[in-house]
Length: 209
Ligand SMILES: Cc1cc2nc3c(=O)[nH]c(=O)nc-3n(C[C@H](O)[C@H](O)[C@H](O)COP(=O)(O)O)c2cc1C
Image (cartoon, rainbow, N blue to C red; front, side, top):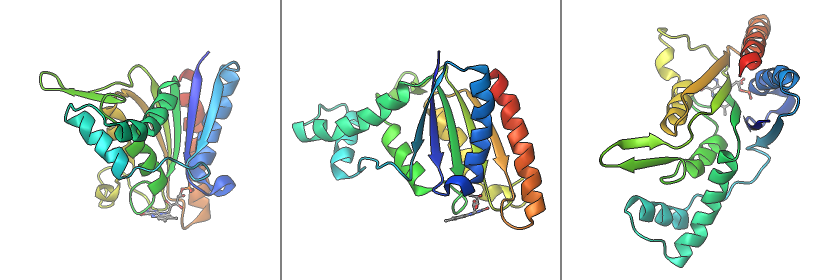
């Protein structure tokens, strides 16, 4: 039995096309793995702990190999909780909107909490950086108002897909399946076609995920 963490990074609920694609993925996945559990974490509906001065002091203490003061230890607990909840899952599904060519701020906040030395990655002078979240697959459903096909003049503006795949790779993911739905603004027929194709691709990936 696997535990799935389903992160939703769009506040648009039933209007969200990234969530529609991730839902299609999970519908097929559940049929193939009825005993697996899915934890849904909507990053716009759930409050995240602050990522502020006290947490940063604690983070820099870890980076500099120094012990935590009592205040830093307390601040670091909130970060540890986010990382442990994440690590307690076996497979990951992420639905994310493109906002200003990148990701919604609540997802960035979550990633800033999650990506920590000693928790999700480590560094040693001998072997450099290595991710600690290994052997776990991720499925990304990404929606964008415009179109960013590889090699097109718009492609360099896409800081959503490359960023997410790179940061997940940094913490250890090697199996990342990404499906995009685009363009979601403009001609409704093109959007409907792209959504249909994305849902079909998502369902296909879900069969062997
Ligand atoms: C704040 C905001 C910023 C956006 N910025 C971009 C952008 O830079 N490029 C783009 O192609 N679409 C942009 N869009 C459009 C969204 O990417 C599009 O509506 C997408 O479907 C959102 O995902 P969702 O349907 O899962 O919410 C933006 C939308 C919002 C609300």
